[in-house]
Image (cartoon, rainbow, N blue to C red):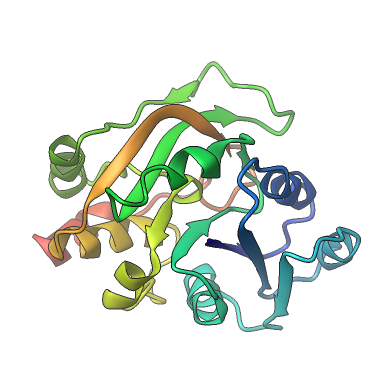
Length: 224
């Protein structure tokens, strides 16, 4: 079974699409943990209107920070596999089913992704996000260039692996997933990206991730 963690801050524009793409999975054995942090928009009311016994909601008030919220949700999780969903991304319905078939073989399982805009269309500027599949190639790309080979919202990880590296670094925002993968590489966990495109990753001007630059070089120096 899988615990899905969704940390959100003012995600009213797309959170309903995001949650419904989780609830529509062909793989049904999961819980969805939603953590509000510093939320002032209508997203709480939107979530209240979505009825499903697998949803558990946590309101952390003004205690902001995505990494901090994910760590809190991780402590609340019940199951041995952890999936991450962003409040503006969309999963294809068979995402978890395909990933669950690899649980015996890998510790971190990603997928291929396609970029979409506010209208759920693929912008020609971005298109598909080609991600390397093999362990060796992925690690080289991670550690040499800081090219994040596993999209955050495509990932499913062993809970014990997350706990062994202390979860997400709460001092890091925006590239907290890259930091997490680098920590796991140091512990020789097994990575894979499935060949299928199973996540639509939203990229738009108002997105906090896509509108900022991040100090990847300093992060690489931390681990090399």
